[in-house]
Image 1 (cartoon, rainbow, N blue to C red):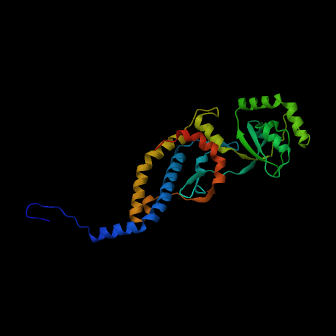
Image 2 (image 1 turned 180 degrees about the vertical axis):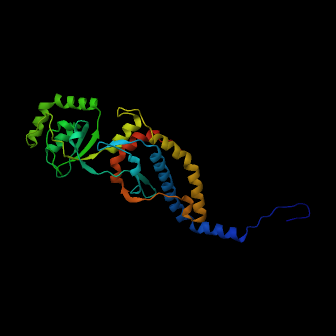
Length: 279
């Protein structure tokens, strides 16, 4: 626009720009909410991909396994009224402990509502070298968690148990255990156990399993932080257009997890938390 004494720039929005702006404003609340979830899925998929590319094998039920290939992603229910959260987890199954596994396995016994009283004694004095489990645990009597242990760790656990042999046996008998013994026995063979895979992964991460450390979670965290700017650009495109393809490709999502289920993984999370880069 030109006046007598000066020239003043004046800008007029095209009709398409006005329509786009109005569309963004009209759908902004739901797009921001949905975009937060898509952003988390994008980052979770990236993290899982980096882990699957670099994770070493770990011993699961005595077999060297590429555990990262089984990692799943789920929406986490109960994270909070004003929070979105997704979880990366590994489904675990109960297996029967074999004779070959017993000599290098430590057992953690956990009581439940219908467990016999002597299960509480096993819980108090655990962890147990599997080859010294003093009582046969039948299916349903207790929850048993197994961990692979080095020979020196098994030796230390054995020495601790034998050092309180009489007290432990007396407590077991008083609690109703049938003929408990603290000699090497096959009691643990065939016991239904849930292997503590998180513990095995941490031992590989930090080199506590007798082999050189194979860090993969810590480097993956650093790579995730470096990928945040790109994910934010995707978020902005989604808010502007409403097209979820801005985040493509997105990972498949498994069944939702609850906070109660997640609590079993809290020790794993706590061990790695100090290494997560701060934004």
